[in-house]
Image 1 (cartoon, rainbow, N blue to C red):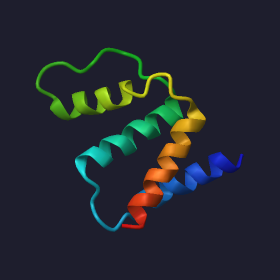
Image 2 (image 1 turned 180 degrees about the horizontal axis):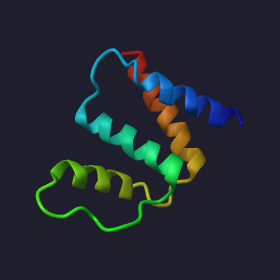
Image 3 (image 1 turned 180 degrees about the vertical axis):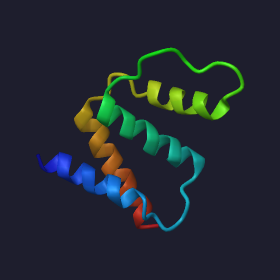
Image 4 (image 1 turned 90 degrees about the vertical axis):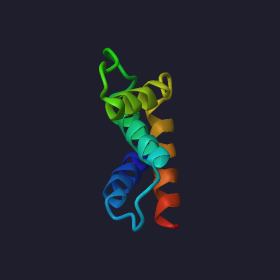
Length: 85
């Protein structure tokens, strides 16, 4: 239960990061959150010229097989690092 509480606190804290994270960090935040809350990415990749959606899809897809607990821990670590910058 402590991991879930820490994860929820990190999600809340993510909105108060002082500096805007890099695009790479934003994709990591997104993909770890999705993996932690929904599990492995399913569905088809976005088509056309929606490069932002494709980047988000690919980032999440790259975490296939990562456990919920691992994704939560990585998310917490990332938010903690970004908050201390």
